Length: 349
Ligand code: SAH
Image 1: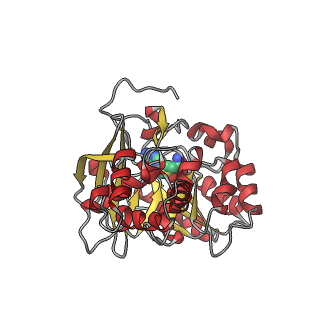
Image 2 (image 1 turned 60 degrees about the vertical axis):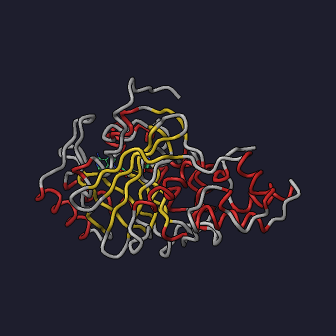
Image 3 (image 1 turned 30 degrees about the vertical axis):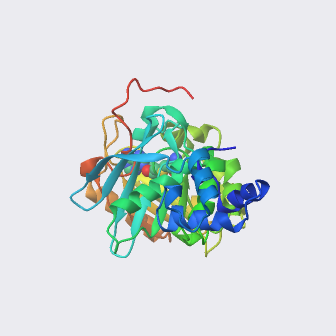
C-alpha cells in the first residue's frame, strides 16, 4: 500500500477505505480537501471524524513536492523547480496566454529517450515520478497563480516521456478529471509522446484527452538521429498506427510537434513531404523553432526559413501553428527543462 494519499485516484482511495471499514464517501471528502481546497493537513479536514483524521495524519503523507525555486520570465511565464522527498528536482512551467493558463508538467526525473536536441534528454534518466509527484506539480503551481488566472490547461510536455510511466500518468489523469478532485475537462489535458507506440492505445482508451506526438522529421535517417526511439518505431509504423486508430478523429485530432532546426529538418523538401506523410490522420502540426541550449549543437532557422517552411505546409493543406518561444530567458521554453544543479548526471535507470 502506498503511503501518499495523492498516489490514489478517488476511486481507488474509496476502495481502500471500504476494505478498511471506512465509508466510501470519505474518499470524496478527502479529495475535496486535497484537490479542491488545497488543504493537506488531515487535522484541518473538519468534516472527517477525529479517529479518521488521526489515522490519516499518522499513516499517510499528503505532500510529495516542495517549491524550491520560482523564476518569472519577462513574458510572464513562470518556472517552478520542485523538490521531492529524496531531493530530486523536477520542473513545471506555467504559461499565461490571452484566454488560458497552461501548466506544463513533468513525468520523470530526466528521460531515457536521449533525443539529441532536448536538454532533458542530455541529463539521462534517474527515475519515474509517482502519481503524487505528478499531481503535486499542479497543487504547487496553483499556490503561485493569482486567483483570477487559474490553471485552465495541462500539458504533459515537461521532463520525461509520459508513456514510459503510463500507470502513474493514468492515475494522475484520473485525479485531474475526477469531479471531486481537480474536476478538469479531459480535453483541456494533452499528453505528448515521442512515439512509444504500444502505449498509445492504452492512453487514448483512458478518456478523451488530447494526444501530441513529437515528430520532428519527415525522413527516418533524420528522425533516427533526433529521436533515437525512431529506430524501434520508425515514422511509417508510427503514422500507420495513428491512421488506423479509431480513437483519433476530427474531434480528437493528433497534435504533431515539429521542432525546426537549421540545416537539419527545415528544407522545402521536408515541408513538402509532411502533408503526404500525414494524409489520412486528422491532425494539426505545431512548428516550434529550436530553442538553443548548451547541451545540443542545433539552432533555429532564420525567420525567412521558418516562414517558408510553414507556408509550404499550408499550401499542402495542413493545419499549422507556429509556437512562440515562451520563457526562453529563464530556460523554461520547450526542450530547455533540465536540472543542472545536480551532478554527476547519472544515465543509469
Ligand atoms: N517525451 C515527450 C514529452 C516531452 S515534450 C515527447 O517527446 O513528446 C517536449 C516537447 O518539447 C517536445 O515536443 C519536443 O519536441 C520539444 N522540444 C524539446 N527540445 C526542444 C528544443 N530544444 N527546442 C524546441 N522544442 C523542443
